[in-house]
Image (cartoon, rainbow, N blue to C red; front, side, top):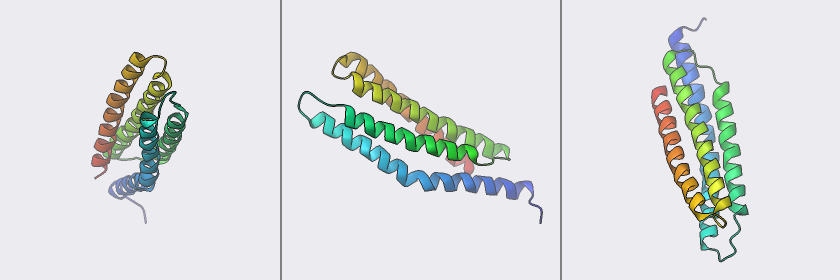
Amino acid sequence: MAMGPVATSSASSKSIKAVIRSYNGKVEVAEGKVVTAAGTYEESSAPKDPAPVETAISESVAVLRALKAKVALQSANAPRVKRAKAKIEKGVGEVIVGFGYLYTAFAEKATNPEAANTAAEKSVAVVEEGQKNVRAGVKLLG
């Protein structure tokens, strides 16, 4: 039986949603580790070691890169699904960039607090924009 455009659109939409669902737990765990490491860093006494936070951020970025790669492999034939997929990929990419700014913030915190604050502010803004794009993409999937 040949699949029509509606069936194909539904299948590709479902496959993208399935990938996102399969990564939800991994992303939450990885981001939870970042939050925990950042809290431990803030509560520690001087000299503060940013290495655990940097490791947690790197691990979180690895999970996000894997998610982005899996989404990129999914087909998207219908225009709506193509837009959704593009928004999701862009959003995940922005979150990755935001985590890069966060990594920089912790690396510079001890030596250049002003630069660290700037990087942290950039991180928040870019991550929020990325999350907004991911949510918009998921909404388009239906």
